[in-house]
Structures are given as structure tokens and as C-alpha cells.
Length: 142
Image 1: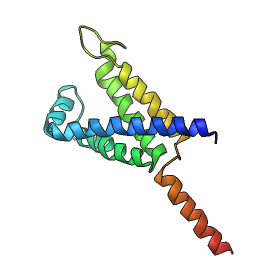
Image 2: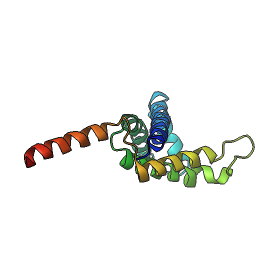
Image 3: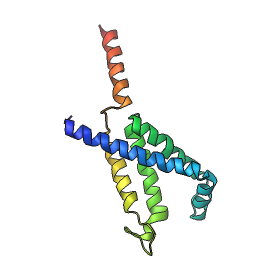
Image 4: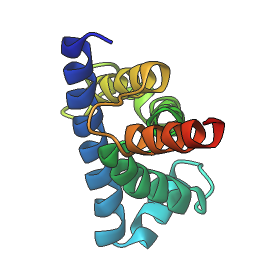
């Protein structure tokens, strides 16, 4: 792959992972029960707050490390679609009356879909493990 493309994908992976990691962390630091209450107040089953927070926190860390980037990208995309269609859509793209719109959510959705489709192997654990597996296979075939 083109080196410039890989550097771009690395930057995208790190920023996306860091953003989701911090959002997941804030859900736990602020009291996950508050997030459960918010989910319930907008008609989303409260237990999904735990799932979303874990996807954001653990998925963010895994994305930063480059482990399961494509799978995590899909999970992040599902989370963002849920946020947009259950909470943010009614506020409009840029928001109304001082409230936040869904423009940030669409940006995170696009970043997540891009990573789900293309991955990012530069400085990733996936690449390290893949190289190790190929090395092991080569040894077995020789």
C-alpha cells in the first residue's frame, strides 16, 4: 500500500480510537448509572448503556493498538448510527437552540466506516500477529 495512505489511516485510527476511548471512559467516570438513566429517558433499554460504554472504552483501546480495527470500526459505526437515529437526528445537522447536532456523530461514523472498510496496519498489533503467523506457516512448510 501507498505509504501516504498508511500514514493517513494510522492517524485516522489513532484519533478515532482515542475519541471513543475517552467517551467510554467518561461514561464510567461520570457514573454508568447516569448513562443508564439517560438511555432509559430517551426510550433505549438501560442495559445497552453498558454495552455501548464497553464498546467505546475497550474498542477505543483496541483501535489505538491496531487490534481488530475493522471489527471495531463496524461496532463503532453501529453505535454512531444508534446515537444519530435515536437521539441526535431531531436536533438537525448543526443543532438547534444551542444544542448539539449530529455533525460530530456523522464525522465519527464516516471515520469508523472508513476504518472498517480499509483497516490500518501501520504500527498495529494485527500486522505484528499476521507477520508472526506467516513466519510460523513458512517454518511448517519448509
